[in-house]
Structure formats: C-alpha cells, structure tokens
Length: 477
Ligand code: SAH
Ligand code: SF4
Ligand code: F3S
Image 1 (cartoon, rainbow, N blue to C red):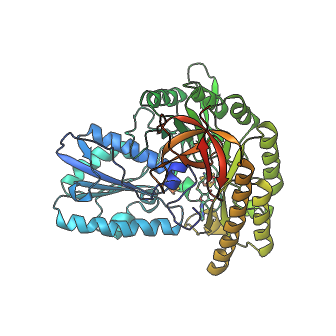
Image 2 (cartoon, rainbow, N blue to C red):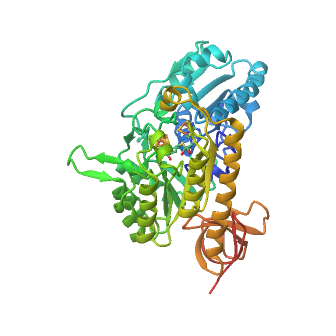
C-alpha cells in the first residue's frame, strides 16, 4: 500500500486493493461483436470511473469488451501522471501492446487519461505505434477519432472543458464485485498544491448535476449495489447551483440526497481536503447511519513550513483542530491520510513532525509516497528537488513503520467489539472465509456461515487482529 507504485492512489479502497492495471471488462458477455476493445486502467479511482464512461461510449458504438488482448481490435490504456513511476509503467505497457499490434493488422492503440493530457501530441511523436491520444474531457470524441484512425489518420484531442461532467452517460460497470461502486460527482481541481500535476491534467473544477448523481445511485440500487463511493479530487468543494431556482447544493446536501436513496446502501466519499471539510459534512455523517464513519483526509506533511511550500492552505495546528472536531462530532469516526516523504527542502525536523502527526491523529492507514517532481507544477518551477533519493526512501520507511504502529493501535481498540460488516467477497487467503468492511473502513475477515453472501450485512465480533486486518466471527443472535 505504501510503495512508490505510481498507480496506487488514495481515492478508494477497491482501487487501492485491486491489482493496478487490471483488465477491466464486464463479465459474462456472450453476444458476438464485430469489434472488441480491451482496456487497462492506471491511477486513481477517477480514472477507473472514467474507463466506465469510455466503455459505455464504445458499447454504444458497437464494440464488445474483451479481457483477452489477443482478441482486441482496439487496446486502450487509461493513464496516470501523478508520479514519474506511473508514467514509466505506462511506457512499459505500451511496449507490450505493440507486440500485439505488430502481429495483428488494423489493431488500434489509444492512450487516455492524465498522461495523454500532459504529453498531448508529443505522445504520437514519442510512441510511433499509438494511434489515438485522448484527454480526460474528450472521451465523447473517441468514436470520431476511431473512424479517422481506421483510415490511417492518427489523432489527438486533449481539449479540457469547463463544463464536461459526462452526467448523461451511464457508465458500464467494469471489474466490480457487484457490491461496491463509484460515482464521479465532480471533475478537475482548482487547488494547485505545488507538488501536484492533477490541475494540469484534469483542468478546472466543476460539479455534476446532483439529480444525475442521485439517478445513478438509484440505478446502482436496482443493480444490487450496497456501497457507493462519491468521487472527486476535493469533494468538499462540490457546489451546484440550480439554474432554475438558483438554489445551491453543497457537498453535505448531496451526501444526504444519496444517503436517502436507500438506508441499506452505504455511502462513502473521497477525497476530502482538510481546508474545506466543514461541520455540515460531519453532521451528515453523524446523522445518517449509512454515511460511513470514515474520512480520508490527506495531511501530506506534519510540518507547517512544508505545508506552506506545498500550498496546502492549512497548518499543522489547523489540521489537528479538524481532527479534534471530527472526534467531537463523531466519536467513532476513523481517519486515514496521504503522506509525501522528502518534499523540497524537507529537514529531519520537518520529517519528525510528519511522524508525530501520524501518531497524534491516529490514522488507521495512510498511502505513503516519496516526492516525485512533476514537470510544470509550481514546485518544479519554484523549488529544488533537493532531498536525496536515499534519504527520501529512509524517511518513507520510517513513516511506514509509525503508520503500521498507529494502525495496530487502532485495531487493538476494536478487539472484543461487534461491528456491522458489509460482506464484500471471499477473503484473499481462504475461500472458507469472507472479507468485509466495517463502517469505519477496517477490513475484517471471518469464517463463512450458511445464510450469508457477498452484499449482505453481518454482525461480526472481533476476536483477533493484525496491524492491517481485524479477525472475527459472525454473531447470529
Ligand atoms: N486530491 C487528492 C489526492 C490527489 S493525488 C487530495 O488532495 O488529497 C493522491 C496523492 O498522491 C496525494 O494526496 C499525494 O499524497 C500524492 N502525490 C501527488 N503528487 C505527488 C508527487 N508529485 N509526488 C509524490 N506524491 C504525490
Ligand atoms: Fe492535487 Fe491538491 Fe488538487 Fe489533490 S487537492 S488533486 S493534491 S492539487
Ligand atoms: Fe493519476 Fe490523473 Fe488520478 S494523474 S491520480 S489518474 S487524476
């Protein structure tokens, strides 16, 4: 969870736990199509969610999906630029796709997502076998570019939009467990954290019509989903104004609207920005049982000096006040984080402050990375990436250790308690066990018993734990 795997991002659990670059295709398609696409996704949950939009567009244009690259007429890769390694991974994958292209005449290769947006037409110059380059706001143009590509014309569309939210496109749910799914509620980011490439690859922040979000949640209810995660780079700044009534819908309002779709469907969200999460959101979590008692609230660093350089717009003290407020309003709520080791000018003292904020905040887990300079970002332009690689690595190792202790301490507090658990599927280690989550986002593994299946809720008593997992048994009475 902590290594520098570029494709691992914080946005949601399913993505974090799925093998990155997993082939996503709907299962059990028996219809025969003229043309098949194969899609691989890297990066955050937003990217995986976008792949579902792309799948929908392709399906409307007569393409069937395949999990077998050799069967594909079109190979798409949805890419991430968040760290350098993310881009290296994509380049490696392109070499693999190219071996197929050399074997199959007419096979098209398309690059989607953040790396497409960052590199634009340079992609076509650098990667001779790529036919299509499409940025995150240009997916509606895919059928046009495919038509041109079939005639031998390579194409790029990386126009960013101020309006596009794909609100009217029903995603084709790919690679899901049928229990948990995502809904994108907004796109882009206006924050300009100095280390981050996202504002450049995803453009300006815009919020999606809440009624289309609720309609999608309704559809997921019909399909049997039991957990919905609302996605955005900064969900707390969601804001939509009804053009007819001029009424505003805030993120807290939206959470409640989605929670009301079905009290048996859990609602989660990611990611919250510490500067923007407000009491209204906390009250919504407190007041609605199905809005989960868990907040992913990335701190990035424990040093106010570094936070200022990162342009995060809060201090260590502000962050700790937020944690205190969360604990006051929702005593059961857990918090997790993202942390960057070795940002520009970071001293040992700054690093020690990061270690101590993990302990003080009691994060149940964190996604931890070494700083990777991204071209064009504020930090790349203004500061020197001056912490040597081995020091970054050592600091990351120390962060991981402190986080593991914090996770274990939190799990220890859950021993001998009983939790309502949503069963997600089989445990990774044994088919005899189920794996599920508590509302506060802890993974719990317990023996299967008759009468329970994935998607059901079970009351599970915690008998044991590791630093990463709770272990228990279903309580039937
Ligand atoms: N919008 C979310 C997260 C976006 S990216 C937020 O603001 O929290 C996910 C995480 O990747 C970030 O929280 C950060 O910890 C990490 N990250 C982003 N840019 C990075 C970089 N240049 N080097 C290392 N980690 C980075
Ligand atoms: Fe990047 Fe900051 Fe926006 Fe998150 S909030 S996507 S870290 S700029
Ligand atoms: Fe990566 Fe783009 Fe997401 S850079 S983290 S895929 S928004």
